[in-house]
Image (cartoon, rainbow, N blue to C red; front, side, top):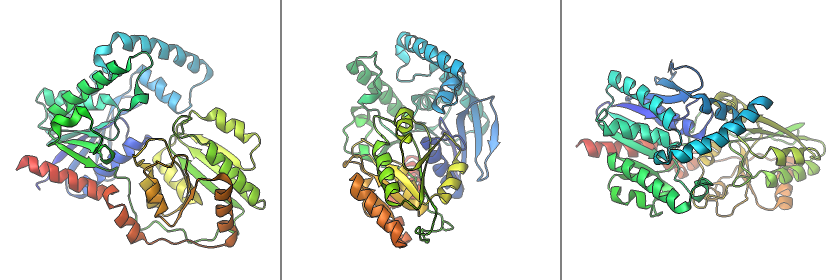
Length: 426
């Protein structure tokens, strides 16, 4: 295939925290490694700017509006008391405003999208991209790519769905039937304008009506988060002599679909079994579980540190310092969370707290020798405690792990994507 110029449209991009941004980065770097050009159009708090990436990518930014800035601060738990009051009022007013702008739904940021499109047109006019890939979520990113294609500014448009809407995303004020119709209308017009559509592998048998008419365009891909680095050391030290055992969770905690309560009980029971060692649990990322965690922390036998949102580099550094990385299963049946393969690729011990037996990631953790899959709080804590006290060291066949996770590597995903594009250009 000839060298191509790509523009990747995403809401977040490292160092800004976010799962979507990390996935886009792996795809971007893989395209660059193949000799293609890959630029990023993202959004960032502050004025518009361009950053030159260390791997060759150029990152263009489009400034957030007022609502976006305060909402981002809310997600990062950075609001002061006065700002929290203002945020509550703005949130209420925004719901009213969105109700009167129902025609734009499910794009809940029509004003921000207008700024984003203006920025995108300026970039594409100067660079003449062969292909534009817009990543969902949010819907506004898809809307930017759709409008560039509809106006004939770009030749090839790929909406890349990293997620598909479920019932829980329906706004409270909206009847569910209306919600489904608006989602269908938006997705249908997007895929009709597209040249290739990327959907999550988990949606392959889902029967989503929005995509039935575009079945010949669709490629089903897993999350490209299994990034294996040769220089990463495997777990090769005994934990028996350590005074402090560190556990780390990085991601989103939610009291409805990724509740940390069971994990907290596991670590509390583990601490009771290891009285001569200090257990520290570091939590990084967004959370609405502060009340659960602070209530537990008052009588805990271990130390809980909540750090909020931090950059990718800090997370990677803290992961190397941790003894165990923590996974908390969610209630999305059949979908393998992108975090699964990030954890496996680190080569670290993993405490997998099973809160849902239907979690699609369980089959990968069950087949990974460094994973401690804990369903029962008492027995699980006992197993981990006995392992630590034994002084044993677990090893893993890295080649076998890579082979089992191959479809989740950036190499596989980009191969599939380029193959689909090659078919268009023939």
